[in-house]
Image (cartoon, rainbow, N blue to C red; front, side, top):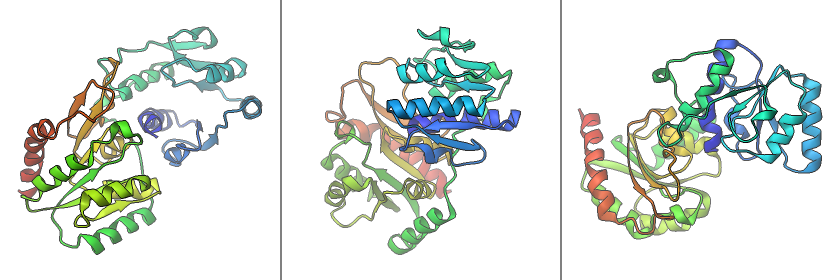
Length: 312
C-alpha cells in the first residue's frame, strides 16, 4: 500500500498536465489506492503466475499503449519480462541493470538524500514536465460512507471535542511492534493533558490493543482501509510505527511522530512527505530495544508544541 501511495503525486501530475488516459497495473492488495479519477482511468489487477503474465502482455499489446512506465527502483524479472514483450512505442524506466529494455531512462537520484516521492517525480522529465515540489502531496480520497462511520464512532465513544491523538500500534510485522508496556507508558503520560486518546490497530492486533487500553481507551480497528483513513483525517496528531498510514497522514496534513527501523540500509526513511514530522530511528532490525524514555524525550516536546498551537 505504501508503494502505491508514494506513486500518487506522479500520477496526478501526469494526468493533470497531459490529460492522457492512464491505466495502472496494481496488485489485489493495493489497487483501491488508484480508484480515483485524478490518478487513473482503469486499473488492471496483476496476477503473478505464468498464465496471468501471458494474458497481461496480450492485453497490453491489444490496448496499444503509447507509453508503458516501470516505476520500480530495483530490477524485477517479472516486470522486465512484461516490458520486453510490450509493443508500446515508448518504454520508460530508471537507469539500472536492465536499462536496455527501455527506450528512455531517467537517472536514479540518491536514495540516501531524496524522499521516495521526489525520486518518483524524476519520471516527469521523460514526459517533458516540470513541477513545483512544494505544491505536491500524496493523493487519497476516502468515501462518504467511510467518513460517516468514523464520525459515528467518535460521536459514540469520544463525544467531547478535544485535542485528539491517535496511537497506532500496528505496522504489519512483529519486528515493528513497540511493546505493550511502552504503549501503556505513553498513554499514562498523555493522560496528564486535557485531550482525547484513540488507540488504533489492525484487526489481528486487537488483543494487544485491548491489553494496552485496559478497556479505558477507545479502540478503532477496521478491516476496511478506507475507514481507517477517514479516521486519520479526524486526528490532531498521529503516533505510529513506520507503516503506510504515515502517507495517509501526509495527504491530510496530520502531524506524525514515527518509530522507524532503518536496518542495513542507507535509504532515506519513508517519512510523511508533507506533514509536520519527528521520529525515533533505530538501526537494529526491530523496535524491541527502543526504550520508552528515549522516545518520551523526543516525543513530548513535539507533542506539546502541536498541542499548545491547537489550543490557541
